[in-house]
Amino acid sequence: KQEVTQIPAALSVPEGENLVLNCSFTDSAIYNLQWFRQDPGKGLTSLLLIQSSQREQTSGRLNASLDKSSGRSTLYIAASQPGDSATYLCAVLHYGGATNKLIFGTGTLLAVQP
Amino acid sequence: NAGVTQTPKFRVLKTGQSMTLLCAQDMNHEYMYWYRQDPGMGLRLIHYSVGEGTTAKGEVPDGYNVSRLKKQNFLLGLESAAPSQTSVYFCASSGSGKNIQYFGAGTRLSVL
Image (cartoon, rainbow over all chains, first blue to last red; front, side):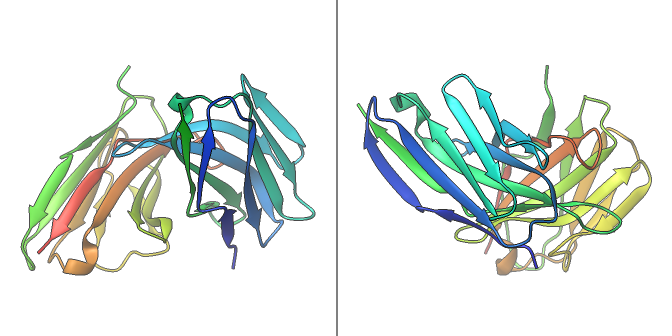
C-alpha cells in the first residue's frame, strides 16, 4: 500500500531564510508527484507537478525535486516571505489499476516570521 | 473564472439527518473526485467519477453516495449522518487521470 510521509509536520523560520520541505513515499510505481499549498480554511492550490521521468521542476522561488528510486521529493523555497505561510502537501499519483489514485501526505505547516 | 465551486461552505447536521453536497466545475473536465480531510489523516478519496453517468468507490466510501448526472456536477450524499463524518470535504476535477487536480474551497461539516 502506498504511503506518503512529510517531515517535519511543522516548521517556523525567519523571513528571508531558504528552506526545504521533505516528502517520502513507499512505492515507486507513480505517474507523478505534486506539491500543493493549502491556506487556512481554503482549498488546495497546485504549486508544482513533477512527472515520474523528471528530476525537478521550478516555478519562481520554488524548486521541487524527485528521486523516484529512493522514494523522496523535496520542495525548496528560496528567500521565504510571510506570505509563504501555509500548509504544504505532497501527493503521488499512484498506479491504481483501472484508475490512478492521488495519495496525500499529512502536510507540513510552515510559518514564516516577519 | 470560477473553476471548482462547492456548496454549501459550512453545515451542521444532527445524527441521522441527510444532506447533499454539490460540486460544480466549469473546465469541461471528465474526472471529478470527492475527498475528506481529517486532522493527522491527510486527504482521503471517498468516491470519484471518470465521466458523466459513471461513479466508483475510493478509499473510504462507506456512508456516502454520489451521482454524476451532468458532466459539470458531482453530488455527494450522506443518507444518515454520523459524528464520524464530521470533516472537511473537498471536491476536485481533472482533465484526465494523470492531469493536475483542481480543488474547490471545501465544505466544513459538523455532525452532532
